[in-house]
Structure formats: C-alpha cells, structure tokens
Length: 225
Image 1: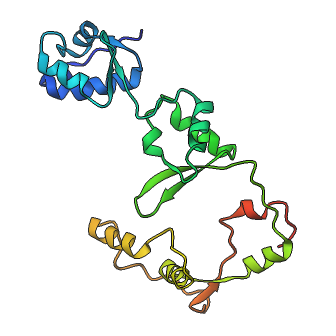
Image 2: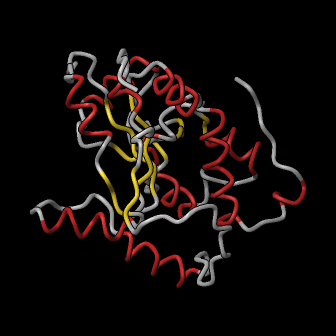
Image 3: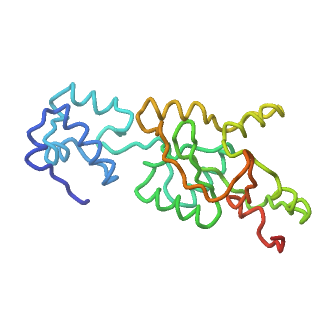
C-alpha cells in the first residue's frame, strides 16, 4: 500500500476541513484505509470522535465496509472495456462528469475510445457540460452521391439563431439555444458585447454556403468534391 502523509499546513487545519483532504487521499490512491491509518496519514481521528466518524460514513464519496474506508465513485467501472459497455447503455449520452472519477485512467480511456471511433465526446452548448455518446459500429449508412451533392449545396444562415428559427418553423426542436447561451455569457461576463470589426474581404449575402466540413464521417469514401 502506497502511503501518504499530510504536510504541516494541512495538519494545522480543523478536522472537518481535513475531511476534504481525506476524500482526495481516497480518490488518488483508490486504496482502503483503516481508521488508524487515516489518523496517521491525515491526523483525523475517526475512531474516538463520533462526529468525524459519522461524517465519513455518511459521505456520498466514502465507502465503509465496517473496517476500512475507501473512495466510492458514482459508477463502479473498472477499465476501458467496461467503460465502453457502460456508455453504450446510454444512447442519449452520459455526462462525462458522472464517470470522471470511476477509476484513475478513465479520462485517458475516454480519449482512446474517441480516437478509435467507439464514442463521441461532444459539448452541450446549453449546459456547458461534455457528454459521451456511443457510436454503434453496426449502424452503417450508405449515402447516395447525388444526395451528398444536394446536402453540400444547402445554403445555411450565418447566425445560429436563424438556423434554430428555421428548424422551429419546420416543426423541429433545435438541440441548441443560442439566444439563451449568449445571454448567460453576457451575465457571466464571458460574452463580448462589442465584437471586433472583421476585415471585409468580399461582399457576402445574409445567407452563405457552408461545406459541412464538420461532418467528415458522413462523406468518407466519396469521390464527390
């Protein structure tokens, strides 16, 4: 068992403040500690101090088996294979924050699954949270070349708000809420109410053609320009 001991600054904190450091200890080591080992490493007496003991055993991130304390993640996932199987159970996506503490290498494994094409890692513009979606390899759609040409030739508005309005006019609910996101950004101070003037290269209309280059997977193995 790798051992850990708090520095002098941490040792000077009150017991309840050190409980947070104890959670970090359990998270990083992923090992089970007895009350004696916790007291030796963190100077937190979980044996004679009933209030400290109760706070530990009632903490959502602490598992106590009657003898040892260990970290309790939201989901018990142990490796990359189990992680992929877990994500596939959520076709509508699972918050990355919900699995980020499953095991030490989970974030690296998420990136590996993304690189292999097994999952998509996308950002939700409304909630500002990253979401993992399963990419089912069994679903393979062949798109006719003529349809690809038509798709690439669609003129889209420059502003996402106009795109969302067009979707609503056609009875579809947009996945984004640009107006709300911009309002929140201004309230948070992250918005830019006075955008810098862009250098005008050429005249463009209100609607301009987009190449859909952000969907390369839809046009793989196509000779259509």
